[in-house]
Length: 167
Picture 1 (cartoon, rainbow, N blue to C red):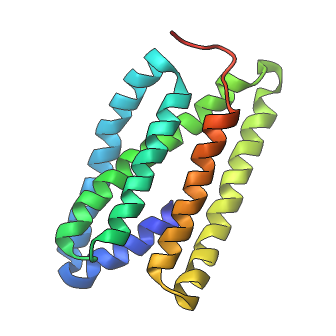
Picture 2: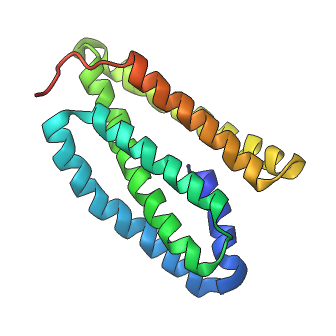
């Protein structure tokens, strides 16, 4: 996500300069901060799987927005609101799903594996995204990101069921 955020930041600076970039950054952090409260409230009632699913849908909306709107200062603020809300949901849910899905005796190793996988993809994704954008286009890059996000969403919907269901 950070690589996509950097790509979007370039777009924010394209026509609005430092002011547009500052507005986008504030939108990102305000959205993440406010959304964290919402995600915590939701997680207490439904579990972190729901938070992950909703955050992934919000991330898809952000990717769709990035593809559908030209990169202007005006379009970047709503985009960063979506990205901030999505990132806070996915970040909160991913580690807490480990707590909900594993035995506590193996918790440390499982958290390490989840974090290592996230770091690996965090390193590879910007390189792959750059290659796709250079070879084809930004729309193709975002389309590829949407395809992988849909794959994650489908995987979560089909295969992940926390042991401790909430009512």
